[in-house]
Length: 161
Image (cartoon, rainbow, N blue to C red; front, side, top):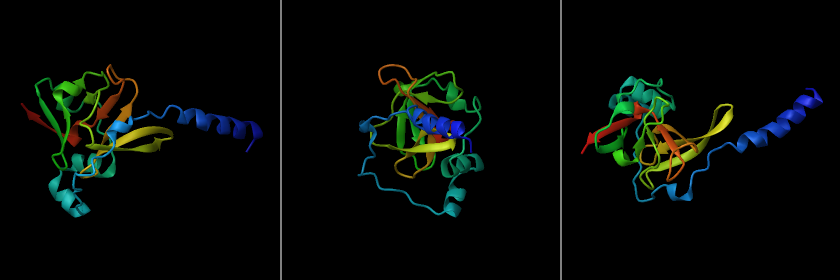
């Protein structure tokens, strides 16, 4: 490896880490929510193929494919894996990204981790009850939080008010 390449990588990696969205401490998992632990076979019986891919294998659905992206009614958004309430319609906004987006979450119902799947780090979030992958959170959202909780629609179930 050339010295110049090594130095660029050495400088570039910490710079890339500075782009990891910071999630506020208020999003710590609620310890009172009992975990739902199922075998892969049980999850496959409970979920359709697309839900299994996203929720259990941390996949991503294609942008603009979820009907929930255009959902405008009042209601609640629950985890498709275990029915835990994650968002309300008051938290939703149109981000223009092609995925349902929210500026905050129900406190304590989400847990986060750093994801390096696209080389650069991102903050991935999961349902605190079943561990189902929901999406990623970014710091380019609207006020009051400045956050965009970008969710796979197939990972949610909408319950109209």
